[in-house]
Length: 271
Image (tube, rainbow, N blue to C red; front, side, top):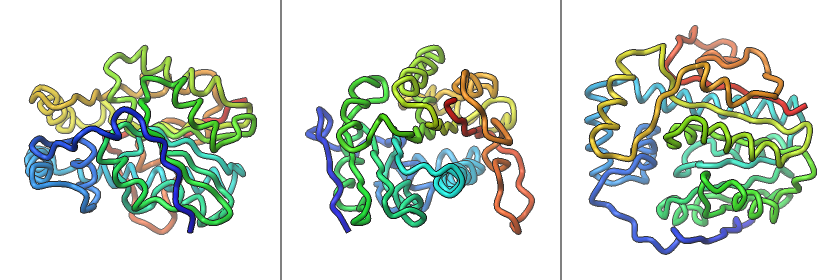
């Protein structure tokens, strides 16, 4: 297995603060991961005490991503992935799903969290035929992301851009849309955009819990309406069934009947 390339940036040298909870570590805790601290577990438990369904949302989001990648590799023939705001490594990371189906797949991860970067080299490995790189960059700076990604990916060939639970961290929706548009503008025809984010309009209890979390002084995560999430795909061709609760996006056959949750997502092709 090949050691992933890691491109350090400003946050690579920041100290990891274990005295305050961090959203990436809390998410890792909800996913059943071990890369978190007692302060994150306490914050995660406090959230689940108010809204236990957040664990279902976290795990359904990961399952949605797995099904997206499977479709992209097996049906759309995609072999290049740009995963921005990937968070802490856990089960079924993008490269693991893609390279199980296509060992030659190339994956670039992007994050600007020092703890995420500290775990990248230890946990993210590529097949010999493919490549995996980790970039220290911010989604708010798409030009830097694209320049660094071009060192591993051929941006003249189709790329799947993955923005999973990251655009909710961009406070202004118009700016979030402009980031998604700028990134997709740099990719050729035949590329895909995968987006999923927490949503409003399905689960009032989730909305109340998240609003309270945002008011606690933690880094806010903005829930958006389905129309706002759908707007990220403007100008692209949505893959059926469109933008839906992630549990309803091509659910696996034979499982229990999925129920809608407050997390919407979709996948779309650039014509």
